[in-house]
Amino acid sequence: MVLVSCSVDAPVKNPVNDTPFEFLPENWPLPKYRFTENQISKDRFELGRALFYETRLSRDNSISCAGCHIQNYAFAQTDHAFSHGVDNRVGTRNAPGLFNLAWHTEFMHDGAINHIEKQPLAPIANPIEMDENLTRVLEKLNALPKYKTLTRAAYNSDTLTSQRMLWAMTQFMGLIYAQHSKYDAVKNNTNGIHFTAAEQRGYDVFIQHCNACHREPLFSDFEYRSNGLAPLPMLLDSGRSHVTGLSKDKWKFKTPSLRNVALTYPYMHDGRFTTLDQCIEHYRRGNFNHENLDPLLKGAITLSEGQISDLKLFLNTLTDYTMIYDRRFSDPQLQP
Amino acid sequence: MFKILLPISVLIFLSCKPEDTKPKPVPQPEPAQLQFSVLPCMGSDTLLYNTNYSLDQGDTLKVSKFNVFISNIRLVGTNATISESNSYHLIRTHQPNTHNFVWTTSEFQTYQALQLTIGIDSARNCSGVQLGDLDPAYASDMFWSWTTGYIFLKLEGNSPQSKNFNQFVEYHIGGFSGSNKTQKTITIPFNSPLAISSGTHKKINLKLDVKQLFNGVNKIKISEQGSILSIGLKAAQFSSNFTQLITLRSIQ
Image (cartoon, rainbow over all chains, first blue to last red; front, side, top):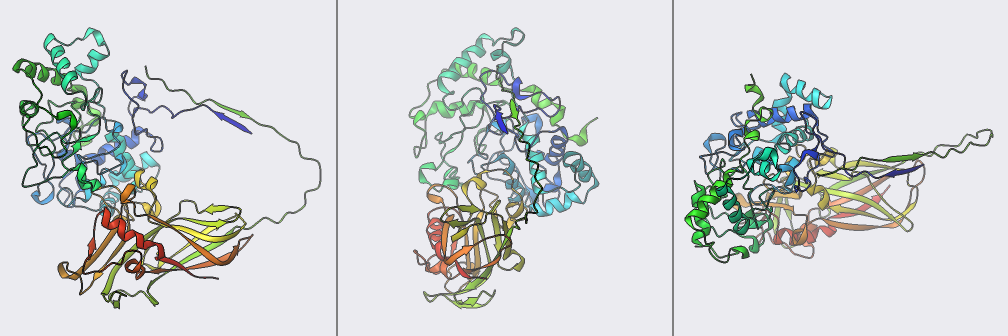
């Protein structure tokens, strides 16, 4: 018997309309997580969706993923520098938006988690977030008829296990794509949509000054860098070095994507800036903390007031209104 | 437009018609069973919890928890090396049912040594949610949730030499890559070659000796290092003592 197979990875399907990843815009790299073992199905996606909105993941059944990752704000939490966990405990880092996660290989601001399937374990166990353990979560969920039904549909078995739970959550989280912004429409020459003159000027500023780290089309290079923020004395959050133990990684954080940036305020890993103006001003002022400062930031970035205005208009074209209003990603209990 | 090649499989069957001879009954080989049995010890004594033991450097240690992952078990022969599939075993010393496991093999050879890893290979630390002993629910006390990676060895107890709160002793050892790597592969030669053939049943008795954690390349003084709770240099130094942690007691 001779087996000759020329296959690469099979096409990945979108859960709802079976659209394969082939609809990806041009110039997008392949996703890093390919759902190869964790095969996409609508039922698994729906189980993951229920789990994302499930408060029983927390010790006192008060907090779900969606508590700090709210769809209207691109699955970030606005107006909170730090989100709060059980017993009104307050976190130490700003909740990032959740989208295009299949393109990430490491998660959290410091990259502490190296696999999307394991990511939910961190907030579930963290005492200042959900403060719960996985075994108890599974016990609680397995006791509910709702999860028997969902698990049976997804896995042809009544029992929710850790792998089944985390695979399903990965399907939900990993299939939230931010790729329908005006920027994408312009790039794809959709229906003759163009940047305005100001947006185009802002785009040129972006390419010149921002794109080296916030790289198109995902608007992050997923590297760890210090952008010169002085550490807050109360936190002294060392960032990446917390994970690697290396002093060269002190104060470094993963470059955040600028997609949906107009929605995800406050900004920076510690949420210290409320507006995009403050963020841009940080780079323009150039009063940087120099330990491990990124080499690309050796001096202040010179920008005129007009350029800042244009840049903000461009950044607003990165908002994906399709994603934030997509009912497939909303709380299933709130469906009409 | 991004393209994906469709799988193209070409199957060619070559069929050979057997000669028309009377079939002779051939005895089917029976898989060999290797039963591993791990005995937790403190030096020459069987390990008991909440019992004071004197370590060789003069420290006193009372153990309240001792868990360790052993993995990637192999038999090394002159002609072949065989590996147990999905070979990940979490030994919880307070749970006797975790001290024993059986490896069934039909690789009939003679082997000169046993090889195993204390800890878990980098690949499994970097992959998605695992099953069995690596299930994050089952191994919840051996899994760091705030960062990724398994705790390979967890030793907890008390010692009058400890400078920690309540004289706690806590070693949570992990870290799987680069200079932080703590998994150690050790080779244990057999006194005489182990012949495995059809139907062989062997019991491989191993000793898991807590004392060796303090007595290896790096002498550990509880007064100087009563706790290690994260990856890094200290954990890596501690792991160099893994090499004598498991030894062979006997093969029956």
